[in-house]
Image (cartoon, rainbow, N blue to C red; front, side, top):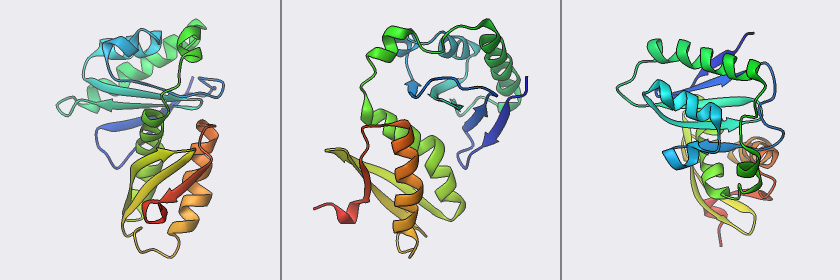
Length: 180
């Protein structure tokens, strides 16, 4: 089994792409011992040590390590845990946890950090979450993106589509300057 990895501009975050879907259409983030009870895989990964948070999407596991931890040590252990877990056939998220997952804002922030900010950073910019109101995600475009003529296209064709794919409650994404 081949699991691809992708570094991000944040040296403490590494994305893992298993060869099969992890979740049907959901996402989940694990940052503390209480949330870990909802995912046996997250629990196994945290048991390695040096892990700060884990974010699951249907096709990706984004792992944030503690600053003092080293990827040279963690990466092989994480890969082994993911492979073992996938071959076990268990559900990544307990069914009751999936049914009770209604924490939209943390999910939006996690998805922005794991998937969107690295892409925007490659172009010399940044994007920050500012609010979620009535299905609209308000973000602030920073750096080279703040005055870029393509910023509106990036928001609609990139950010909005990604957020809507993973979070059906998101109807639209707007730059904070558009907030009335």
